[in-house]
Length: 296
Image (cartoon, rainbow, N blue to C red; front, side):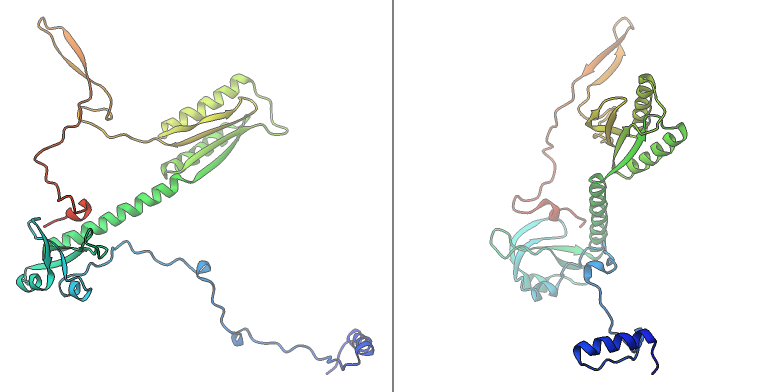
């Protein structure tokens, strides 16, 4: 095989020092199809699909197969029967109409035994649909909490144009609508046109009013001075529970009426204290309320 003069010269010089024969042949090209497949680590692979459907609960014979021979029993009328033996109970129910479902496996101790509940076919289907909706709500809440922990920063100059200001405030409003926090940083820039203090105060007031209209509130004190460098932090406004008669919970209500002579009389009414309802149905103290709720 022929080789270039440079390769022959290099081979002769190396061979003079080592005394080993030098191969002047070019390296053999290996096809990429013959190379072994490389598996990426799990953290570098594509994310797996996360199913929001809860895990199927054991029912009927599956409860005995899971070695739950004694459990607390709740019938389809939500009547509490205490600790029972599962095999005789399972043999006594009409499986064409009812199912026994393990709604809480417990931990194997006397303080936290398994809990089984009797459902009709329709009631079990409704219960599973409610579990799916509950899983979706929890997933949505986790996403909102994750978004609330993120902060998007927007930088302004004191001499920002009206067009750029509108664009950045619109983008900040979109981030607030997603539940994220927004940090507004206003500072000077080399070569920036000089602005008066009145114009700087007008810029701060414009940003504040625009973000307030988009449902934001300041959650942190402002840092810096006008004309130098200022930082403003906003987050989506938290809405309180609404009570009857308008207004949020904890506010005083104003009642308007007529007096004896026909004059208008206004009176402030203090918020009423919450009164516990005696006719409300509560589960036994030993049962978690989350497992008590559900359709028949």
